[in-house]
Image 1 (cartoon, rainbow, N blue to C red):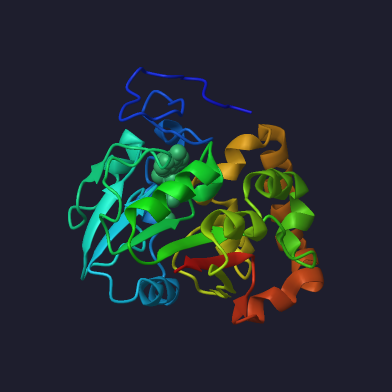
Image 2: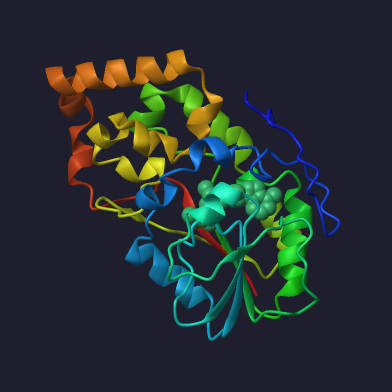
Length: 273
Ligand SMILES: C[S@@+](CC[C@H](N)C(=O)[O-])C[C@H]1O[C@@H](n2cnc3c(N)ncnc32)[C@H](O)[C@@H]1O
């Protein structure tokens, strides 16, 4: 597992306790290696965006932690982005505010500095989940809004069938909903976010109705879990899926997935008020 191989460049600051990869990445994935081109694949989907923005309520000021290239940041509010990876900060489009270099476990802001906090598809990478969630809670007066995946995935889905190793990695990384609720308090809610079959956001699970898209190495690069499986596993996945798509085996066994309008791949909206 390529964990912190380029290690600490000595720029930890503001009391951060987490080790960094050479580009500043502060989670379990090195975005100095996989970050290039990320923003072109991980575009916000408007239907997912709508539920996040609604959860932010009437917040005028929002902190986005683990902000990456800025997916799902509202454009009609004042957003402060925090992102440890220089590669990911460089992916931010020109119409997004520049991100501050920082980590979730030690946000350089006073208590109650923002109306709301958000963190999308990032908490599974934080070395100290509870410290990060406590920081979101501390700096936000209003809702803390998370978008994350459950450790469990649907059993009757073709992708875990083809590459169980990938989902074993994700199951170990993704915190359970109970753990998140315990950290954020009893008023926390968790709701299913159904993923549309034509989802614009290219997270790996979004392609349940478009299996051929996962054969594209750029698509796989935007799903950090692939960096934790052996290259032979990825090769076996692409070889087997390619063969099954060509022979019609995939259509015979899993073809119903093409006609699903939405599917629950484990994506959840978590809101602590
Ligand atoms: C999968 S990307 C998601 C980016 C963006 N929020 C989105 O939804 O597209 C995960 C992000 O979390 C960041 N991250 C990892 N560990 C972190 C930490 N300890 N504190 C803050 N951000 C972290 C990574 O650098 C990366 O940009």
